[in-house]
Image (tube, rainbow, N blue to C red; front, side):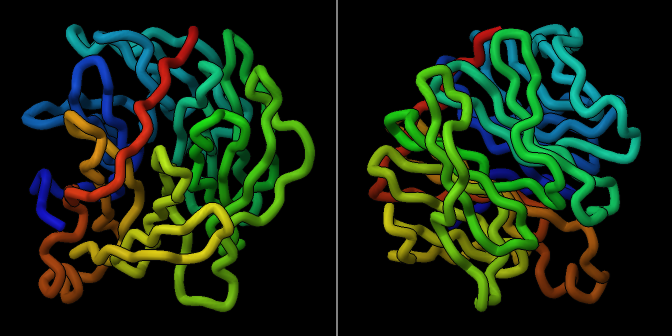
Length: 280
């Protein structure tokens, strides 16, 4: 695992490889900024995750709205409200789905129990899919678009739910990866083209790999304990990018782990999926 970018994020999240631009983007939620190599855009509110609309445009989840963000001008245009009735929440993990929608989780500013939810934006509609979520994470999708994955981190279980042809949940979620009884806390996840699930684990400094039966088959150490979100990218989609967080660590811990909050890259033998376009 090497350092991709040495800038420190209080809470790195939203790892995204833009397939048309061949450019990697990520967020510092608490720093209220979007980053890419050598670039940095400031937001007035929390910003956490994005999907790509076209070469110059992202759909970005901000404090109380999904916005159309122009990478050239930095202009942000509201598209749809997001949990606008609760001023005490912010966005967290999110990812575009293969049907052109965008899933995004919200949570309490202080991670209050059950204050958040998981939402889906699709062709102008925002619908709450799963209420009473504490820390939404691991939003990702099977290669055939038939299933979505997500978790509430304190539950220590990554869920899988079948999707209909329009990308809406069809049926009840079931446990796909069970980390109960372990020291591992599931944060962001991404699914590779072969169906394996790659999960960043908060507090453990690692990304673990699970097969389609939920069995751990590999793990990769990250030189930052608070690992947050992985994404595949690079010319052949075999580079794993991983964000991390420095927030909440004492000065003594930061002195011992100077890479906390940085963003990392790992060359793998696995190919990821190209992130799908969001349809506005």
